Length: 317
Image (tube, rainbow, N blue to C red; front, side, top):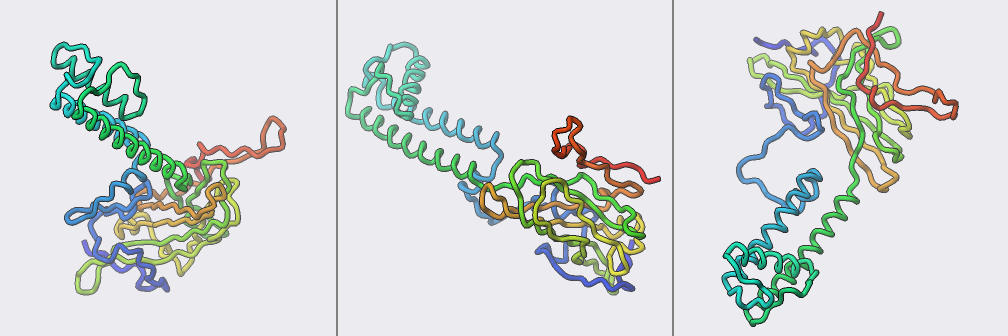
């Protein structure tokens, strides 16, 4: 089905290509995943960066990698000790091959971690060299793990939470496109700046399809602080890409609204970023936001922000 140009009679300026180009025109192709990452799969001659991967991977995966590295390293040295000769380790109680290997592995662990209980010790020049290699490798590994842990803990990360859906709702006698965000942490975010860009697929006069982009004007694109939630509002006027567009129109255009938020985190004294996006099927109609905050009923004088209500909407009328 050919897609008509939805902005041919509007004053919308097609600007702000976000780096995705104009050739991604497949049905339901999403540019930004729900977690804010680029919806791009890199194949071919890509570059692997172990340091970056270890810093950015989830904590659960990071600890699994550390444990696997620790076990595998000591398994290697245990095999090496058995090849050199288990008889060159004094204190080993000779038994089956598995029992000897187990004792060699625990000797490697004790040397690797510099615990050194002393129950087993090298007695030959060959095992002394292996023990020295284990100690050096263990010290370097500990330094590497300590550095990675520090970087992961000190890395500024955004804990901004986006509403699951956006809404089109009445606003100042007309309509508006809205979504909302809140800070999950108690840290103070200041000088927040938000940019919204609408992406859609258009069909050119020659029949070729092309992705286009347009920056959306906001009621307020900056706030000084974010103590509560922030309703981000794009008024729908004659210059808006949403002007007189039905849900069927937005689906036909394969619309995606891309969000970029920049803020300064006082805890880290660094700028943080948060990405998100809303596709046409994630836009609700005929609803408004349920309030997220209220006065503390206990009379403490504080304002209660209920983060669990960020997705809650109520019907209009």
